[in-house]
Length: 75
Image (cartoon, rainbow, N blue to C red):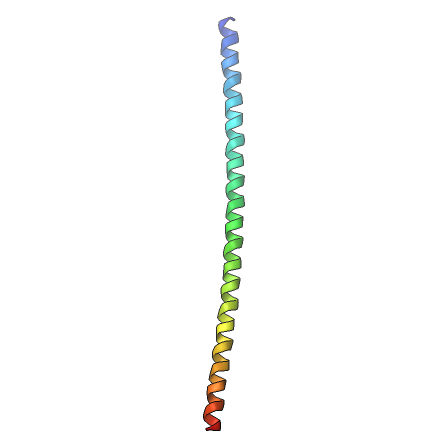
Protein backbone atom coordinates (compact mmCIF):
# COMPACT_ATOMS: atom_id res chain seq x y z
CA UNK A 1 0.00 0.00 0.00
CA UNK A 2 1.36 3.38 -0.87
CA UNK A 3 1.59 6.35 1.46
CA UNK A 4 -1.52 8.09 0.06
CA UNK A 5 -3.64 4.96 0.56
CA UNK A 6 -2.35 4.57 4.12
CA UNK A 7 -3.08 8.21 4.82
CA UNK A 8 -6.59 7.86 3.40
CA UNK A 9 -7.17 4.71 5.44
CA UNK A 10 -6.03 6.46 8.61
CA UNK A 11 -8.32 9.40 7.85
CA UNK A 12 -11.27 7.06 7.24
CA UNK A 13 -10.58 5.22 10.49
CA UNK A 14 -10.45 8.54 12.32
CA UNK A 15 -13.81 9.57 10.86
CA UNK A 16 -15.37 6.26 11.88
CA UNK A 17 -13.94 6.62 15.38
CA UNK A 18 -15.27 10.18 15.71
CA UNK A 19 -18.68 9.10 14.42
CA UNK A 20 -18.84 6.24 16.93
CA UNK A 21 -17.71 8.59 19.68
CA UNK A 22 -20.48 11.11 18.82
CA UNK A 23 -23.08 8.33 18.73
CA UNK A 24 -21.95 7.07 22.13
CA UNK A 25 -22.03 10.58 23.59
CA UNK A 26 -25.56 11.11 22.22
CA UNK A 27 -26.64 7.77 23.66
CA UNK A 28 -25.14 8.71 27.03
CA UNK A 29 -26.96 12.08 26.97
CA UNK A 30 -30.27 10.41 26.19
CA UNK A 31 -29.78 7.91 29.00
CA UNK A 32 -28.98 10.73 31.42
CA UNK A 33 -32.07 12.67 30.31
CA UNK A 34 -34.20 9.57 30.82
CA UNK A 35 -32.73 9.03 34.29
CA UNK A 36 -33.40 12.65 35.19
CA UNK A 37 -37.03 12.33 34.05
CA UNK A 38 -37.41 9.17 36.14
CA UNK A 39 -35.87 10.90 39.16
CA UNK A 40 -38.12 13.92 38.71
CA UNK A 41 -41.17 11.68 38.49
CA UNK A 42 -40.13 9.82 41.64
CA UNK A 43 -39.73 13.10 43.54
CA UNK A 44 -43.15 14.24 42.29
CA UNK A 45 -44.69 10.99 43.57
CA UNK A 46 -42.91 11.40 46.91
CA UNK A 47 -44.17 14.98 47.21
CA UNK A 48 -47.73 13.92 46.41
CA UNK A 49 -47.54 11.17 49.05
CA UNK A 50 -46.19 13.66 51.60
CA UNK A 51 -49.06 16.04 50.85
CA UNK A 52 -51.59 13.25 51.39
CA UNK A 53 -49.91 12.23 54.65
CA UNK A 54 -49.86 15.85 55.80
CA UNK A 55 -53.55 16.28 55.02
CA UNK A 56 -54.40 13.06 56.87
CA UNK A 57 -52.43 14.29 59.87
CA UNK A 58 -54.27 17.61 59.85
CA UNK A 59 -57.63 15.82 59.58
CA UNK A 60 -56.73 13.47 62.44
CA UNK A 61 -55.67 16.45 64.56
CA UNK A 62 -58.96 18.23 63.94
CA UNK A 63 -60.92 15.08 64.82
CA UNK A 64 -58.91 14.68 68.02
CA UNK A 65 -59.55 18.29 69.01
CA UNK A 66 -63.26 17.85 68.28
CA UNK A 67 -63.34 14.70 70.42
CA UNK A 68 -61.61 16.53 73.28
CA UNK A 69 -64.09 19.39 72.99
CA UNK A 70 -67.03 16.94 73.12
CA UNK A 71 -65.57 15.22 76.20
CA UNK A 72 -65.15 18.55 77.97
CA UNK A 73 -68.66 19.62 77.04
CA UNK A 74 -70.14 16.35 78.37
CA UNK A 75 -68.32 16.48 81.70
